Image (tube, rainbow, N blue to C red; front, side, top):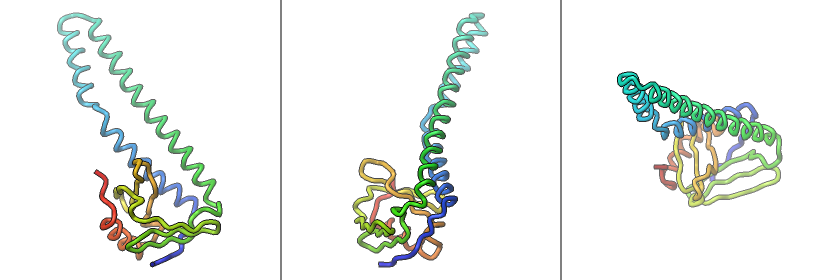
Length: 173
């Protein structure tokens, strides 16, 4: 098993999680059907103006405003939760449970810190996805299990890790 040191720098931890939450926010925003709702609103407003029925125009503009406000509130709540999570991770960066050494082979992933030694079989991870030099591994309940960062691992270890995880864990659909 190849084992190497990690240096849990709070700024690097913050950057990795900010990148993860930006990636997730982008995925969530793709699910919002913005184009159909805007189209319906514009068509309703045009019909209201064309037929001279101001109430249809006003209703369509109120609906559009409410829809955009809902999106804005969602984004603010998402960012608030992300910031809280990142702050808690930075507070824990000096914790003795934080991984100081990391390793992997064809059978398992290995974590070591001052207070913890842990081995996880590759089967623990249900899926993974890649985003700009980071690998996000998920548990069976679709929750994030781990972020494997190329920056934290180093360029000499990350390509081999990426190759190993691609053989052992299915890519997230």
